[in-house]
Length: 393
Length: 194
Image (cartoon, rainbow over all chains, first blue to last red; front, side, top):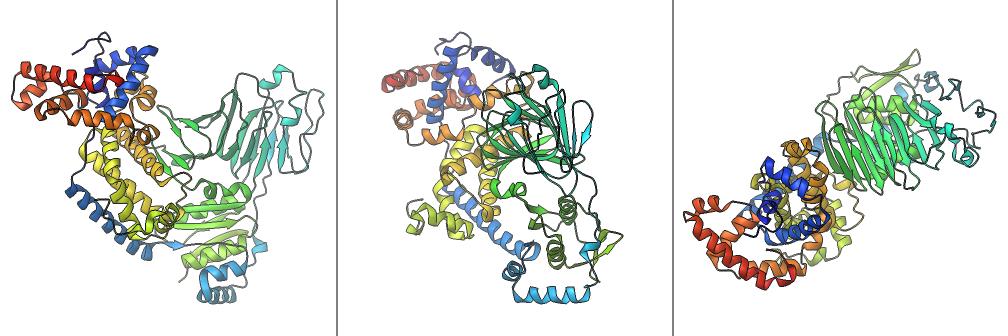
């Protein structure tokens, strides 16, 4: 036994790696590894330890596990036949025809024949508008009026696209330090979406029912914004960390693309990474995720997990296509209500365990609702501007 | 085991990925047999526990099946699997609150990124010269000597624990360790350690 590194011996390092270290040894180790030479030594030790330990599963275990995987696969195929109903919503009848085949087309005709009195133009859309609150408390609707900068700058922030504000063009002119203390915030109601380009060039796509608070101009030490709801961030690369804070998470990046969802009153929050790498902090832990991974946080249990997802398809909402996966009927209805900005009341008796998938175009609520009705076998009517969903019989 | 798989069909990565997406059972069987052993060994070194390791590997493959339709692998299937296993392991140790004692001391980051082997390092280690040399040297030790060495240096048992579990004296354990270390140091001169 060589006691070469003070009290932390190779034996203690082995215990650390095999999870057998006592509290005292963990403490010793933490102090010890702060030394850079020790850290290097540990790196090497770790490599050799991993090379040396090679516990292999027995043939019998491999056989048994393979069998149980194949059973799992077969059961799941059977389950899918019964349980999964695939909703595929598209705005053109041709696509619907492709997906549902002739039989479904027949159903569409039948339903629309019987319910042709449902006029989608009777739907009442959410009348709230997008609001930008300026540092001085004034509230402005960017779709109607251009935002004039306060304090005599008088520069229009709106670009040619009324659903977008660009702060980055002013950043050269706004050298006034106090601008980093001036916060604006923007709220997006149901049925709307919006794009903001922040002073550093970071592009933020805001989902409906979301609110973002941000400084008019970032200072050189920090880039902090606060989010409620859902947003897609395309962060400009810089040495200054960009931090998004929500009620329960904080996400730290240098330059990358990701989607973060943290709705008020929801059970879960999530972060989906498209490119680069991000560090997600919950109240008690932090975790780094890689592209095509989704960090999922259950607020009630305070537990988090990471899984692999198709990040490009899950974040298509920013381009006007909402992709929903594995939702219950109620969650589906809630998402559609927020996406289209209409009130939808579910009076059907579809079981909570049913799962729905779908892809929804922003423009065509009529096609969306019709396809939902066919797939879920429900009827609908419009009453006082609200969409009411009921059982078929 | 993995060599007598009948399908040369999956030799190209593209066909294999397509077969996985299409839900071809043979493709799942193929990758299971191909990667199970090494993934098991990797997960065991993070979890240090047999039943958790089995569970973690099993759910990795089941999950792959579950998400096959939206499967989108940017780099290789191999690194995808290692990364999934890594994430699964972290979830397990988190759930079991193994990490609490590290957390209290503000040591979680060092543990997660320093002590736990990340998937990139693991893939590099597989088939590396270091691994071959270390494995060969350990395998060349006399049986008793090897067992004592592994229990002590790899699994982290104390001399007294080893002595009582093998029903020998502490002195014998110490002697055998000295022999093991001398031999390994000679064989692994380039690696400095032990």
